[in-house]
Image (cartoon, rainbow, N blue to C red; front, side, top):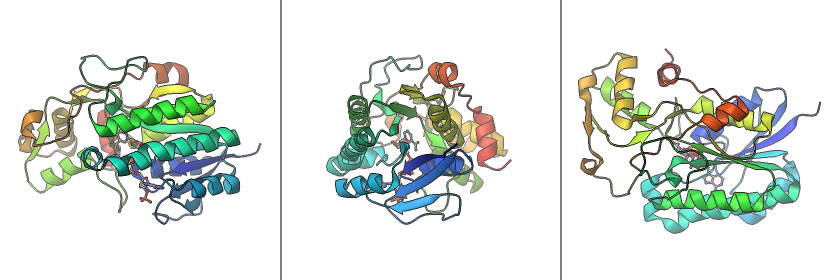
Length: 299
Ligand SMILES: NC(=O)c1ccc[n+]([C@@H]2O[C@H](COP(=O)([O-])OP(=O)(O)OC[C@H]3O[C@@H](n4cnc5c(N)ncnc54)[C@H](OP(=O)(O)O)[C@@H]3O)[C@@H](O)[C@H]2O)c1
């Protein structure tokens, strides 16, 4: 059987690299990474192309040369505060580049799997959002992610949107950290860490995003899917779980209301997502948070 050619865009990123590595280990796929900078971790298992996906000409060339069957788009500007202060830059990568990728996928008959975010929701609820709930982003980052979802849905015949939430795991050198690493580093140095006790999320172990993507390809999933953990907890509770798993001093975790965090960018109070659809239709089974944390820290 011929291998499926999968192009992972944003392959130097935290989630993109995990997806690339996961697909590279599967004999059914020929995985090719694409990122703005040179290959973060060159290996024999995958191909790699350095390209700027905000440059339409480069993207067209990429498709003409690679003829991907599936494109997984993980490239984004996802620093929420940065997006709030740099609208044009955020729009170029989070919206405009997605439009070009979507058009190229449609023209070449490729499936597009696009990563999105819980931040498309407004947070004014106490039950996990389903794929049928109405988005209402509170900040510019969320707005760009929602616009990108709509562009993909209106352009592509074969697409899946995977909404992920607070992705955690062990980053490679050169990748941005995540809340779990930040908390662990502070506690290991006997430093206090202030964390919001009134923002609820369903954190996602990075390997489970890779699992979700592989299932979306294998099962031919179409439309929107929530691909995250299935435990809803506050950021403060997540920090306490890190302390417990690592056997560190939990009194160093200081739960505070969002108002005391000194953040300018509004964030949803409650943006936990329900994974019922992914469980039912794809057979998606995420790790528990304790299991994900143990794997993150090699325990
Ligand atoms: N991380 C989370 O907690 C989280 C939560 C919810 C949703 N998401 C979504 O999940 C996806 C992945 O997030 P992430 O945090 O893993 O991303 P990330 O680590 O910030 O990686 C994104 C990658 O995109 C690449 N990139 C940026 N601009 C590019 C361009 N013009 N051309 C080609 N590549 C470009 C960068 O590559 P170089 O390194 O080569 O410059 C970067 O490594 C995003 O769609 C994000 O919105 C993430």
